[in-house]
Image (cartoon, rainbow, N blue to C red):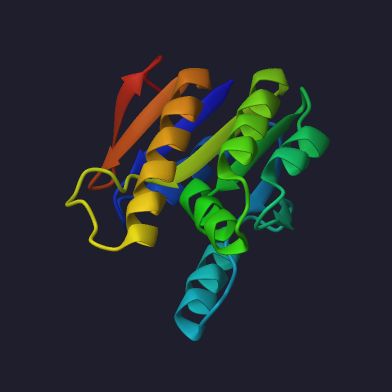
Length: 171
């Protein structure tokens, strides 16, 4: 089963994903895409690390997400990917072929076994940004979200800590 959890900043996406992963009864592999580029981000990452159970395995991978999904998926595993928008940011900054990366990730999701929970920030519900890079980020995030949501069995929009199921069964 693929679950896609999206929403605004500080709406409970990661906490919800972690609750679902813990409740899965499967071996959890946490795939972190963030990079600590400043002290504030390092603090955020430390908070996330401290929240995770010690028996969960963590893989920190800012770019090669499709490869990690391919290598780590399995019928007895739950992969928790946090988060897709940070992954898109990393791809943009690296000058990657984002379309190819997106297609590769979606293809791996289609083949994957076990449970996969993907977390992302909903960035397309606000004003269109003024800068070219910011607009490209919003566009790329939106296209990625559409592709992942089409592949997902369940899509959840988090609003003020509450899950709103927009596709699939309510859990």
